[in-house]
Image (cartoon, rainbow, N blue to C red; front, side, top):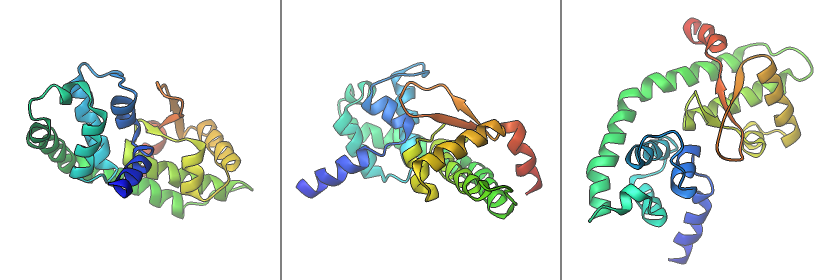
Length: 196
């Protein structure tokens, strides 16, 4: 059991923002009910590459309100919550991923002028990678996460994100947690998506 618990605690720290909000912070956020909040937490975990068993384990560990009220929560979760979430992801995955892939390809093969151009490009691609996990319209982008993904120092990541906001590629999204959340600005990325 000990190696499993050690692994579990490490992955628990890396929850997608929606799952962290609902399962760890027990924050309903903007969702109308706990069932809805737990459903979207499940989707965020699936998008982040968590297996069905890992998701069941985290729900058992965190015991969110809707899940914990069921007589046989694991069986109910598999039959209703997971099945529905997997179906939704399969229906929309290809479209969502193609948008993110277009953004990454555009960034990789476009000129980024100036002394900071290379850093800005790497951070833009790192933000697109985060958007693959959390969604285009609200992804968590802490300096630590983005600097690790982009392979740059934290200060470099912070400055590049600030420039991407100034150039209107990104905008800050209000959030209940301490990490910064961003969204790609549709008016700016739409021409990139349509021409690629």
